[in-house]
Image 1: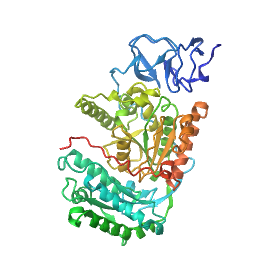
Image 2: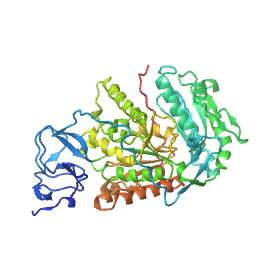
Image 3: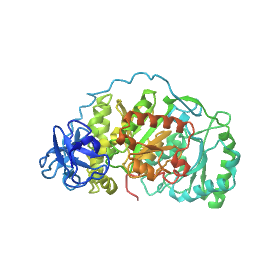
Image 4: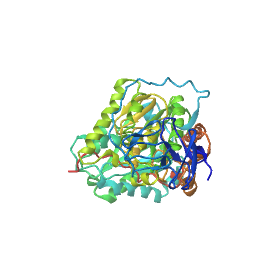
Length: 523
């Protein structure tokens, strides 16, 4: 076979990279032209997988995105497949160089964009005020009241109460597996309170009731008091949220009856709310990636980074989570921090994760998952460098704890686990009113009350799972500019924020995926 240009089959991302990434399956024996010479693949390379484009000596860094993603486990010749069999993660020093490469603010946009959303009124803080959906939530304080909370939501649907309230997007039951067996007012209690409160006062939740058993650690009264929860009444005054206790009500049946009655009384008020035109600066964009592949950092994630930049340019907020999937790439973000203090907040979280995983005899490099590795991701460093592309290019203005209210404008980081449902639960609790989720393997995630746009990293996945994917970023591998797909994502975000349904919403996904992070022991 005569030599063909490398770009016909693969992507060489940076001049300093010693690897290329397959855009599509490449047969064994393919000969490539590269850097004035040529080399031949001794074996077939699957889409998303890497191969060497120059000789790499044992112990030398393997580079992708212009950064270290691992080290050669043996001598590697040009054309050889690079993966877990010959690449190790290894430890290496990162120069954090805090706030040394702070990007200049983006210029004012040529057009200030808007969306049709809900304004909850001046009684709410900005991150709780502007919604993209109009839900009523039944929030369980403990797993012991989870079924009862679901029964209330199910009964409301069965009775057809929503039929007469077309402006209500639904009644959702927020249920989980926690709420007791933890230290009272300890870290887990405080974090769960913060997460439940984040959903209660979420801008996409127009009203809610709390349902508990009665004897649990996470008492509704403690939640209301510690998180300063309140409801805006019809007369505009603040009132105490309704909290039902199964033990006080006299059992499940009576609690369901009381819950349905309360929901029925709230529905007319929620139905009276109408969408109004709002500036895009009121959007908080939650970003996540799951079921990633070797092209996630080549297509969907950098395209989402473009959309993130466009959101920040409009005066809005973009949130990056999944701290274990920032690991090994945090030095890229600390350089973009607006101050040393902000950079050190991220490093402190990285050091905490090193300590936390070591307590259980685990390593952060246990991530990537088997599915990630099957699709070409080799080390956590490679996965992280691709993952942070979702954050675009603007300055990192703050770092938040899990489920902490996100009040800053611009690009921020939230400390969340890499596990998708847990990560997104924290980001939505922080106030994200619309989300974008990239996937290379095919995640079907959704997270009510926030709509979730799904972006496929490759066209075969998009075609195969067309009923679940909203956007095909795989066309970048066929020559469509990253910027063009990024603008497509941004326009989709505005449309979804205005009421367009995502594929996950059309499939009814998003109620079971509420998964708060538990960091301590179950007692």
